[in-house]
Length: 253
Length: 98
Image: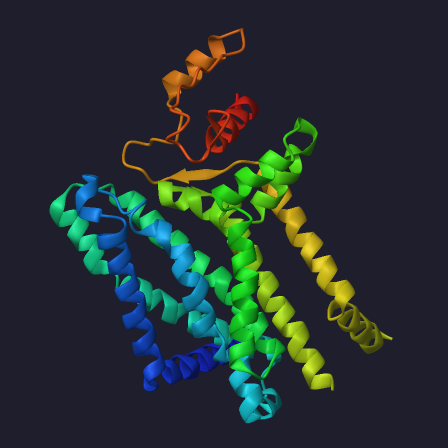
């Protein structure tokens, strides 16, 4: 147990180092911060709302930013290793594939957490101008980070499937978009209009319960629900598990 | 016998059958967790938690409660027949809890 944790730590440290020695991390962080500020202050009209909260103006955009940014951060995880052939080297090291998968995932997740934490000027702004409920904001940040993890799990799977980073990016965007749209209110309303009778309503609710948006909603309001927590953890576990299956199939031939 | 059994388990776990099984297992865990609502309310004024007084009051009622909800139909784009989905869901959850 202790040695496997040490292996995961080594892999994660190395991967995190790769992020910050290439321009990728800085480009990613700058684009993320610009998008966050632009959408919060201009599109949502943060100053005109007269509401000291980050819920509607800031966190509501996160599922849509992550849709493009997290697959971009996660597409190189395994596709790069496969393209350059270093995957053979990595898999012959005295570590199990699991440790490599978890280590790479943790490194990217920490990187996304750093990008998220760098949005702190928005938090300072709202505290300077008004008197917001900081518990709700903390809850929003926790939810946002967990959501990034769920996207990253899917990106990891898509990345393991192919040697081309572009293909992996497109696959993970499509899967994430599907998980987003099945809880998007206009889509749910349309489904409800089709399945209007009470006998079919449970199907609509079942579809909505698979969505990232439905589960992120509670975090934005300031409530950590066990079900929402478990949903994001399940998506991460399933993504990493299927990554393991794909890596094993690749190794076998 | 033992190493053989371990290899068999691994082949099952890493096949499409294994993926399906893990998927079903995760969905089952989520469904079971849904039966036991547990939530942490981080809002300052505990806006999403029923206070003790409210709980006492609701326990002492012996008839079912009618909730009347007024909304502006054409301005609310999330509304179907004047009744937002969120409210409908909350109503059902309340009915389950009390």
